[in-house]
Amino acid sequence: MPTLIISTNARVENEEALMQDATEIIHTELGKPKKYILVEVRDNCKMIMNGSTAPAVNARLLSLGTMEPEANKRVANRLCALFEKHTGAAGDRTYIEFTDPGRANLGYNYATFA
Image (cartoon, rainbow, N blue to C red; front, side, top):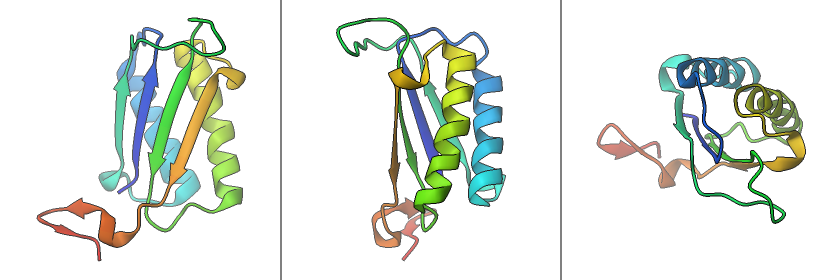
């Protein structure tokens, strides 16, 4: 069920490669089956960071039960490198929010995970 939403003010030339690579990172680092991983890319967003419109990324990763501090550090490291490769946004122009919404707060297949 992990969901990664990547918003950037840059144009992403190869969205599919970005999504496939992000899926692999989430699968490898969080141990979640690929069939449940959803990645969404929103490029060309209106975005300013530190008064500059230079490439920036605001990402959100939601996952049930796998938001451990050490795993988050590994994922942040790998995703920042991936985002820089595909958007040109440096790590100091990237935010990643890690959230575990709780099983009762996430719907799937006509129900929740609770």
